[in-house]
Image (cartoon, rainbow, N blue to C red; front, side, top):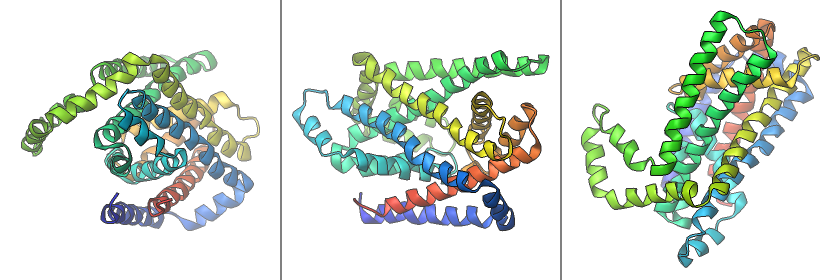
Length: 334
């Protein structure tokens, strides 16, 4: 990636990070850190491990492209270091956290960083395919959490209606992405963009100019699902495993104030909070939506409001630290 583009991503992320930090109540932060103690350190280091799930899923997606008999593809993939991809994973998520609309920051950064190594088409298809797999795993995580709630909690009529609606939403999302895996989403995604006011002319010109490249990208996306279903399933399971393992964060935090907390409750808190936060994707760092989700989910599991506030504060601090780490990694070439 050119230094100019690298600096643009870095400065943008730095400005948003500074704005987010300025919104914190530092007295409350200090009290929260004192209460959390060494568990806060455990929460921060936990994500160094969790990002390995994401990186591995992306790595096997890229290597699936190397199974193409084209020797140029194979040689290009050999040049790609796993730890360089880990760096791009962390930095990409940092930009996504700080960007309104989520995928508007991290994905272009990843494509531009990978393109000099494996080529623009393969970089684009692998990034789109990984983003699809990441979102696809969320739908499965939410669907599994519905059954966990039914088996472990008492279900009232209003909650039953909410669970049914959420289940229908998840099944619709799973169907949409399975269709996208079979046919690709590059062309169809841009066709949807054509209906957005102000972007119609740009999208039509872009499709016309890059029709062949977009078709190639869609072919590469569909190849993973059609030619190597084991690789596809492995990537999805890694992402789903990451969702389930990340509930450890809730578990570590709640142990400070609720020694009797169980892991199933932590999964349910994370599922409800992530669902609400993703519905508010247009907000930088999902500000407000995530906090509200923690308070509502803990209250729904008969926990105190203070528990929800405490969890939201510690998670927000952990996110800010990893956003800062991700931005720093943008400036490191090795």
